[in-house]
Image (cartoon, rainbow, N blue to C red; front, side, top):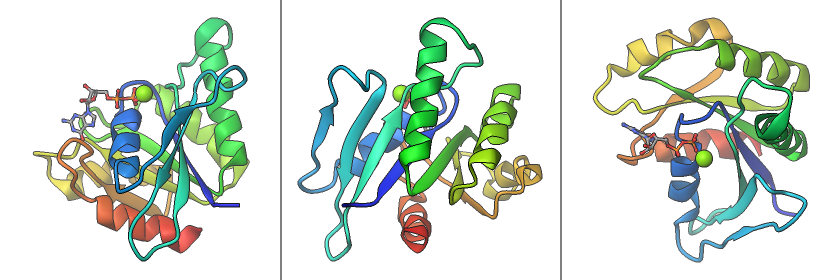
Length: 163
Ligand code: GDP
Ligand code: MG
């Protein structure tokens, strides 16, 4: 069994963009799991000379318990539960939001190896972007830009240390 890395976070923080960056490497295989996993999207992260891992993208977690948003949140939790490492993706431009605080709450209860991935840091002061999330108390905080492909190698190093 290959290790599994889950991308979780509120809508619009750049999870799917990061998923594409991670899985677009050579021989990347992306497919939908029909039926059961409406909002889970699996792909492979293959880097030459390194053990591949599976990445699961999830729909954004909206803070609703009913309807589609609720179903999406459940999918995200299910993905986090089955994962070996969770990438909690946040938006470095907007800073922490109430929804991020909620997600942090259930991630803490889950107690899985978790990295805080501060995305959209292109054009930002990296230290300042990270400092905004320091109160979350997550040891591994990595600033990245998915659209500019910055920080991805550093992120992969941190993921590998936790697999
Ligand atoms: P998701 O809802 O978390 O899956 O977010 P998406 O991947 O769909 O991205 C939401 C929006 O944020 C899109 O317009 C992306 O182009 C944009 N975005 C994603 N990553 C970055 C980034 O690193 N920097 C900037 N500036 N925009 C980003
Ligand atoms: Mg998405």
